Amino acid sequence: MSDTQGAVWEVFVQSKPGQAHKHCGSVHAHDKEMALQNARDLYTRRSEGTNIWVVLADAIVASSPEDVASFFEPANDKVYRHPTFYHVPEGITHM
Amino acid sequence: MTQQEALFNYCLRLADNSLILGHRLSEMCSKGPFLEEDIATSNIALDLIGQANELLQYAGQVEGKGRNEDDLAFKRSERDFFNVLLAEHLNTDFAVVIMRQFLLDAFDFHFYGELKKSTDATLAAIAEKSHKEIVYHLRHSSKWVERLGDGTEESNRRIASALNDLWRFTGELFEMTEVDNLLLKAGIAVDLASIESAWKKTVADTLQRATLTIPENTFMQRGSREGKHTEHLGYLLAEMQHLHRTFPGVEW
Image 1 (cartoon, each protein chain N blue to C red):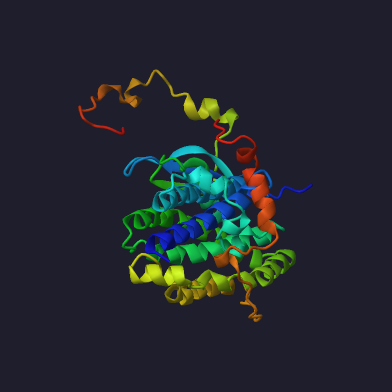
Image 2: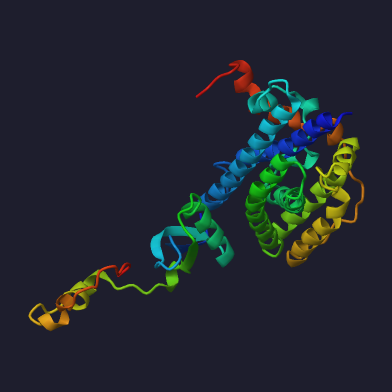
């Protein structure tokens, strides 16, 4: 039987104005409007958000597990690459 | 007829529209075309039953005989229900569910938009709250009408036939009775004649995008204002009420 649920869309919800959108899951839908409505029904029914983004899962380019070493393991001998010498001023949020 | 009797009947009519449509929609739970749509449909059913709950509570207060929302929902019989015939129509297929919902959402959208201005503070407050939900319901159902109408050959055939089957139940949505006229004078009720053209425009705009046309048959079925229903309502009530009637006052 063929899949009739539509494409997979990734859902990003912004919990408060000004904050970054956070990935919270995915939904099936046949078009943009349906994806938005389904995301609203599944993820923001109880005032969890102020804004929603839906993105076709196919449109997301992701790194693969084999890339871990070359992408994410920095050379630890080059300490100047790490932002540990800077102090974050007090009162700065969302950093 | 006193104004109090009229207001009681008016509240019942509004509550029954939401309750019966909500119950019909709740029958779709677990039968949606896919999971997300199933959840959307069930959410809308919950909104509608929530609206019915508030309206029945208020109806009980207006009546002043100590009946609460459960008494009014579960202990009235068919002839004492005043929901429009369209609301009780069977879930024949998904296209019928969507078309029934769309025609009533479009009506509710304009109706509750006007009811916000009611001089009855409770009805105005219920309308204010309900209208927000209805805006979303209409967005959901009208998009589905467009998708099905402008979709495949089969989806177009099904939604067109749903429109043809259901159109004859839309006339009585705008029927004014003694109740409406009495409450209209007091600024409580909505003038149904004044929202009919706005409703038609909303419906026509969506149908056009869906490549559908308003049926030409002008025969209109009526009766709900006097509690006369189609054969479907009795079965719906039997299922909806049997638990409460079997175990009076049951709580869980």
